Amino acid sequence: MSIDDICGETRFDMSKVADVKEHLQHLIPDVAIERLSDTFKVLSDPTRVKIVFALLRSELCVCEIAEVVGMSQSAISHQLRKLKDHRVVKRRKAAKMVYYSLDDEHIIKLLTEGISHVREELHDPIALPLGERLR
Picture (cartoon, rainbow, N blue to C red):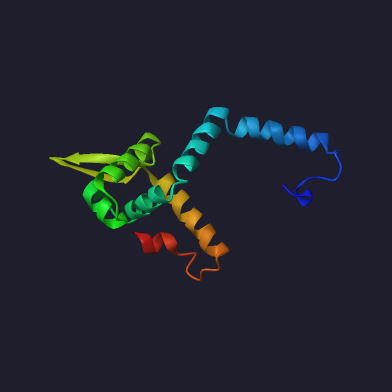
């Protein structure tokens, strides 16, 4: 942390601090903060991000995901288990096949907003209509 990242004085507006603390406590309980943090942690792995973006395009089985990502089925299964445990993906069994898809619309929104943020930061001209292009 640099000196520019901290306040030069320790005086602050107590009423503002109290208001924000109360708002935070009512807005989101600690258990929800933990779950949100866990969701971001599971999405912090580049392989899992690739898997999730592949599933944003289409429901896929493990062997299809492995081919798309360029990894073994065993490695993909391991990553899918982590994503499933955190409710990022869900699975559907059809005979001997197991298909994976994104868990719900919230995950889709999280991904499209996240990539739009990164593309905007990189000055990518195609940042905004991402959701439509991925579907």
